Length: 316
Image 1: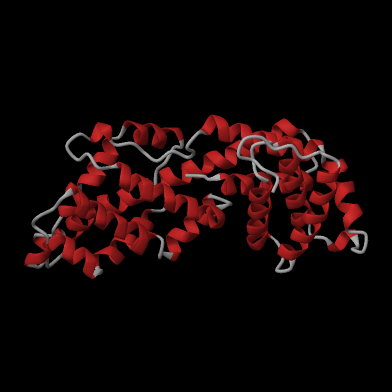
Image 2: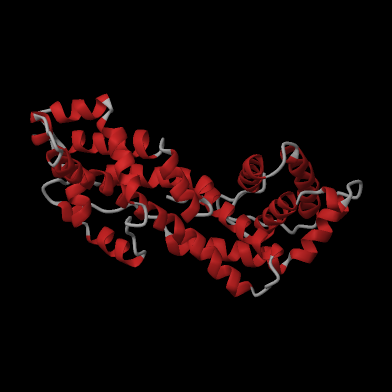
């Protein structure tokens, strides 16, 4: 599921889009922010559907082999055991999954070669042969082969990678979250005899709280943009403004917002989070630069008694 760092990244992406856009209607950009979070769940549903597509291709492969001009005995008796996989049978009966597939209009007819390519890779894998040879199948062994399809077949496929990159603009960033959601699904699906008890992974542990967090962080950063820009400028007088990366500036403004306006988030947590984000989304030197500037700003804000943390959110 999305943790607070992922949510901060979503806000960062939306702030960047806001400043690059000619449209400055905050509510419009808020809508895009929430959509970008929902797209993570949509990506998750597309991935589950693709796993099912690979499984279902078992039947088509068996049919094609049987219809060869000169089929072998093996062709005529292709093993379709995968079609009775307990995890997949539970998934396709899952009401949440069925509703989500309908909501996001998920179907793979636009790329019929993808499932074939993935199944061919699976069919050639020793792990698949071992699965077919098993006679003591369980929900765990059935989940294991689906995990293999996901991790070693789909995620290793350049074709699948291209499809998801084309469909989801933030695929490279959200891929990690997707993997966590799929892993959570394997954990959740443990009732093979009572599939109705199996639940899809949730995009957030507490969406009402997380939604409020991202909206407030986004709005407050924009609302105090000029004020916090001036605060940063005071501490970067030896730097030419056009030499400071926009991402660095946005990260520092978001951090200041958390210092002042989010009373339950410890200062150290805020600093560590944005320093980690900077490693991935800004320049190699950004980490030390941001850390130095935020230290100066924090010292000033403390002196002005503008940072008031409550509960576990201590300043130090």
